[in-house]
Image (cartoon, rainbow, N blue to C red; front, side, top):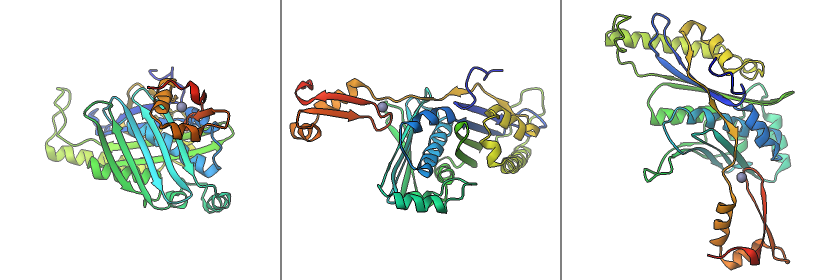
Length: 322
Ligand SMILES: [Zn+2]
């Protein structure tokens, strides 16, 4: 098996579905399972359980969405709201280096009320934690081509709905996204599964099967899309989050009748991108007054990465100046 070398809970599995009568792929899919990196990312933070669940969903969703884009750089999901959670952030590089953080209000009573209102059999309701605002999905390839960004309002019910709205606005290809995260006996499970219809173009003539007319191709695509949606609707949250089921197990069981085939899975790991050079460059650009504000009365200051919580200690007189 191609994917045996990657942990089942730290990978993105690309797959394709056909209509069963031939092998022409009509639907492409991705399943991201990121429980392992979510565990180590979340254990460095002290989020209320509902916030940690939302962060885990965001990590899975970012991994899943990033894998549908052709890019060399960073894919970012960033939500800004006016509720208990002000910022929800997850990003991932093309190499699968994943990180995330949440900025929130200091309001334990509010989080308790949100937890009581939460239905644990479903995803976290965005509005209850984030209020109103927006979610930005950004692709930054780090070159002069710059960034591509899509923005949707925070008025969707779940993170996965916001992702579907983004696809609706940008790609105009039928897309379904489901997302689930839960902390169980074995730690975090966090998964996102995406199906996208491939534009029907009559298929290619591979010599083995009769080329289809556009009308036949469209009908086959419609049928396949309908079947795939129905099958996806039949999977339970418990199955999606079952640590005993790998992405490959889930895809091949669920879409067994649609000639599923997978491409090699891609790794996802908990890997921050902060480093000493970036921190020192940031410090060098601060005004002396700002440095003084950060330092204690002995002149010591600590810079903490908000993603990985690494502390880096400096003395204000020992920061190399530009
Ligand atoms: Zn870091």
